[in-house]
Length: 339
Image (cartoon, rainbow, N blue to C red):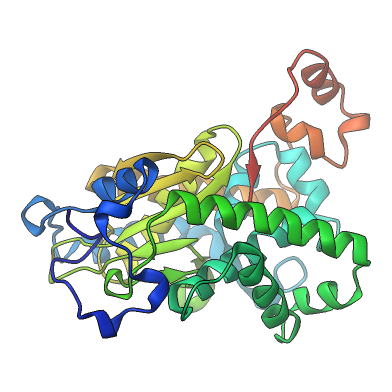
């Protein structure tokens, strides 16, 4: 079996005890992960070295009309920041998007669960000896509580019952991760929540993101990186678009990844997609469309449209939205969740 993003085996001393697991010990879900993510160098795609400049030129040319409309009254620091969340919201229900922009962000169990779980996954890569999912979650929460981040205030001030519920949910997600994934070996170069960023027009427009997990690295113009996002619930087209956005950022930074994969922990299943030049051009067009809509909405030159869907369940204006109410009345319960 070929390891993800790697062709040579390390010595035992190079790996923590938690990762000292042989292929014969993998369960079927773990074997599927290694089979999908592993690829010999000869099977990996090669990208033209000039692609990064081609994509940057396309974005800068098409986004240039927005530069003069960005001001500090509506945009922080006179900069247009674009993330996967902002793009998905601007290209979804615009009324919901504008309502959420008007509300200050607040930490909660659903919003904190992913941050805690990702930190626990990061710790599991380098943990010496065996650790249970809840031990990793405990340590992750302790580290975050001592960090200089807004989540630290939330973890310090939340009630004990809320803290216990957060720990239980993150522990369940961590259990699913450890059950489904083979131990992340250091030679696979695993990275969790590592920020990637592209600045356009001298930093006036910034694209940024933090993939849940990346494995491997490019070699010359041969793509070697795999980008993975973890989800629970049902498949959503926006999940695939999130990963394409990350692929675009990597292409602007160095070289595109070779593979994107959404992994649904509660199903133990991948939704993979190979990266191509056409995929990256499509991702760039989506950024251009989303950026224009976002700026027009914030500047008040575009009337917010309504696009009913599963997100109506947690929309702050749903009680006053006839379209959203009608959608929910005719829709079955359930829907996608996101870390």
